[in-house]
Amino acid sequence: MCSAADARAAKSLLEVTAYLHGQSRLSDVQASQPLTTGQAQDSADLADVRGQAQARRALEIAAAGAHNLLFIGPPGTGKTMLASRLPGILPPMEEEEALVAASVSSIAGQSADWQKQWRVRPFRAPHHTASGVALVGGGTVPRPGEISLAHGGVLFLDELPEYSRKVLDVLREPLESGRIVISRASRSITFPSRFQLIAAMNPCPCGYFGDASGRCRCSSEQIRRYQGQTSGPLLDRIDLHVEVPPMPPALLQQAPPGESSATVQQRVIAARQRQLDRQGCTNAALSGNQRDEVCRLTIEDQNWLMTAIEHLQLSARGFHRILKIARTIADLDGAEQIGRAHLMEAMGYRTLDRYLQS
Image (cartoon, rainbow, N blue to C red; front, side):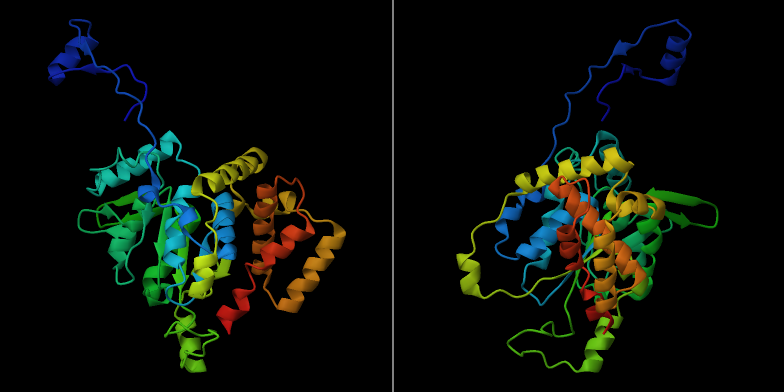
């Protein structure tokens, strides 16, 4: 796994000692051929997703700015299919990232296919019945959990309200710090866990609230309780909330194939590089001071945005999320300055704030 190193082979520590004292020589080890980048999810391509233009666009924005993303919609609308395409449009891993990810897989005993997945960002999708130990790691002999196996890649949580609130609350620390500390009586072990969170949920227990067919029979109290099961502090760390509505079969058949993952990935890589050149981090990771510096608006746009925020009853946190999303949209456009069109599009990914809180 070392791309360039002066390596020599020894049969024992005695041979190593003799070599270090200049008493003998060791044979050179030929460097292996450079590893080639693998293919994400067996070539799962974004072109396979028909329709759902807004959800596809949100996925591209999430990839470009490293934003966490929540899909909301009834069963069968393509939420899981969309999420599984995210690794294919993310920038390939740098070698150092890939080495860390391969090391975590090795510790977890899942390293058999690491060469096929070299520099491919991992995609982990634990079931909602997964225990806290399975999700964050632990055990008598501490081993990495799903969040560490997703390091450098994507953690997908389907049916988000079905996860234990206690389990979800544990995700708050790694989402902020990019690592998880597992403490035992005699020691503490730190595993890397810098992942991008993609979540999906139904709008109600039956899944069809708001559907034009009127299939939903859930009461207001059932809907409120269901939506309230999701951890509030976790939702606060999700930048993009996107509805994925059902599409009539006839429209799906007529919908042309979308852009390929490779095409979208090129825009994502360019936008990501603009962020790194400008502020040294992704837009999702902007600090308060950095956000104020790189998300400046004209007086006219600032007044327009404040009026819109008050009208939609969004929080200060929602305001800051809109600025970060708008900055990413501007980067995808290659624009130096955030414009009105960028703000308007960004607001379309936050109007579900009230919907989730209703």
